[in-house]
Image 1: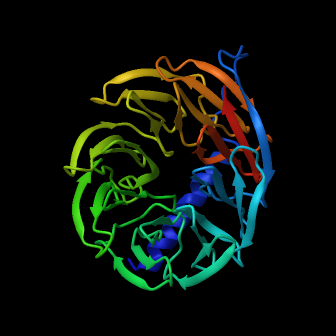
Image 2: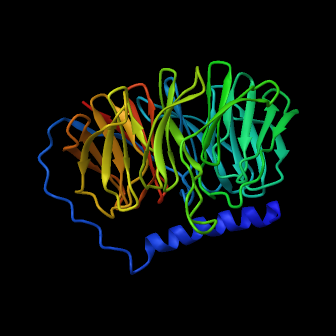
Length: 373
């Protein structure tokens, strides 16, 4: 297959997944039980962007959030108050973003152009050969971009020079969903199909790679097992989901698998040094002990509610659902302890953290800052 066909198939798969999620034959979401809050928490401020048809990431940097809307708006907000610090435009509709190190922020447009801002000013633009749905990574005065075929492009953050390109042997089919792209010390951490790879950020050479899943199935779609971002970082360990195949943790110092469990699911996992938490394709939520991957608990009270990615906040695990509710579960038991409403449209992506404030994004373009107390 040509790379163009791969990208088309990857995009078509996402479209099929989205249509399936919205179809009339989808199982009816489980009704939410009445809940007496066990902890305090509230929406402390909210803002609005054009919308989030794609699961646009929010970058939490120190005391601020960098967010974007479908229309190309990029803005920085004070995490404590929601006050707008600056606003800029990418000059076109966005397909992926935002990545930021606090100074430079990067998004990718639907015209396959990476746009990098220095504060509120556009610093440079560069054309990409393929569509991108993974938020760029900005680190070490470099901008790293992963296209939908899982090719990684490295640019100089200052002037936009293309430094290197890492193109691995092509998979038969790649997932048109946000992949895994992050960093650890002097290593770039990249998802390449079901494998987690450690890459030299200066040269683009692969230092190590570890499979989290072993793809199975009778056709290319069934064998699709790309890693989904963002991962959970716990010290030197990175834990992530392989699409509809497994959840596992990798030791980035040794380039070795810590543990993996065969389990389905399509959204990013969350967690901390106690448990790793994620939902399967039916939104059955499970927790595995971080130390060895043994099952810790299961919660079946959110079946078919279109859960978002998960994030750990203190002793709670937080996620959103398709009706715009944000749920807080006790980390140790899996019991619901708090529920907060947003705008009634689905929570997309994974909640972002900046200090003690968490920001969730809804498909309707709502930015809701939450603070458990």
